[in-house]
Length: 250
Image 1: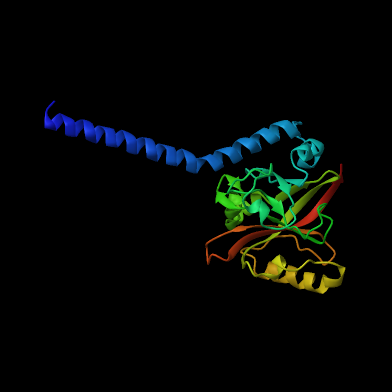
Image 2: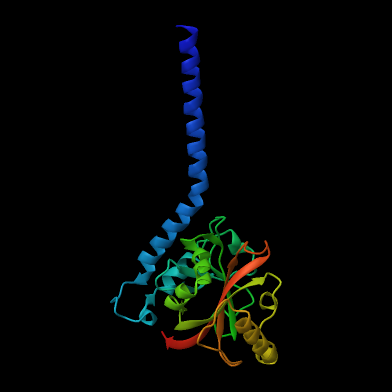
């Protein structure tokens, strides 16, 4: 065999090895995304009853007994019609665990949608805080970034939360970018902090990226969805605030 042919074969072998290596690396990097998507689709198929499309989302039936057989930390479900946000909500004993564990408690750097560990698990508190990673625009809370667009916010203004005992429709009243040091991450709004709660509502509306039509009072129940954003800094958070306006007992 000539030296030229040997060199050519050597180059071909190197190319094949490199292609295999980079193909495996891409597969490995993509695995958490595929695992998360597949698990979510499977759990929706298994535990959400298919109803008439004409029914209100408040009529959705979710098998929480079955979900809690998977993970006792599952306290609710979130659904935003017209988006891919349709996930179980977990609540741990801290706010760290579900940053890198999915709703089955399997390790996954994408994490899960989860409620702040200080909040009432049944969404009975004045204010409830729910977190999710910004992964991409099709998984977890990635689509929240679309609320930067007022037209999108208007068309997708309802957020539905389900618990074993009730279904709640929230309507968005503010969208803003805040610091991770914002007081909502450190304070629980209760009867004794109602003045603080009133001030927070006022500030959230004043700082909103655009105006909404609903305005909560200090006695209303609110929900905040929080995700990461690098728009201003690594400590910035993109948040969507909403007001509970319809409550249906299950």
